[in-house]
Length: 254
Image 1 (spheres, rainbow, N blue to C red):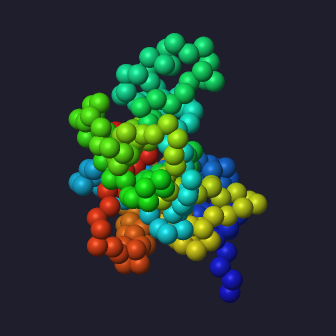
Image 2 (cartoon, one colour):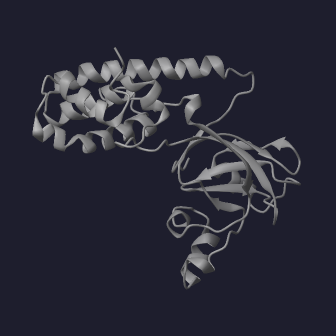
Image 3 (tube, rainbow, N blue to C red):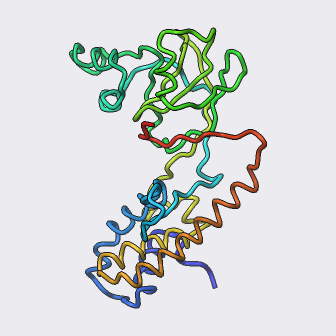
């Protein structure tokens, strides 16, 4: 029999069936809310730093979420909202003095992240064909105005990337994890298509929480965490490398 829950409509029906509540109009009407909350857990995790939290989940990171931008510019226009999150005082001064967003240009190698960005995997300076070291922005701040003789460091700063010794022109090859589009009645995504149980269990956790069935939520969360753990372990096996990589999440300010 063909799998049904790997589409939006199939997933919606499956959630009610797994809850033994087929035909429940209230739950059906709230499905998109369950889906929204489920994706927050899938892409960003939940209470990831709180090991003892009973609702803790690691974010899903699989090869299908990887993307490579072979010509990401180290210069460009800073988005107003993302620039407000940076600690760099020069950026704040530029924003305060700018009449509109078109007046805001990059300085000190600060560039807006791609909208779908989740976590940085690697970065290579295309001008020198050498990898950039991924560091926290505190490390960049520690260098101050000291030059390293070329662009060798990159940090995630709020919704921006910061490059140390950024050139006036130049590009990097960025490899990063991206958030996939939310499934709709007309379109799926690679997670739902190939690993539908991840969406199913995540939605069930949110539906159980909505109905205040905490025992069922704990049971479904255990299934969800096992599914994500298995897929993340598979990623580690197929992308194993002797070179350690420090991955930095979107919006994370060390």
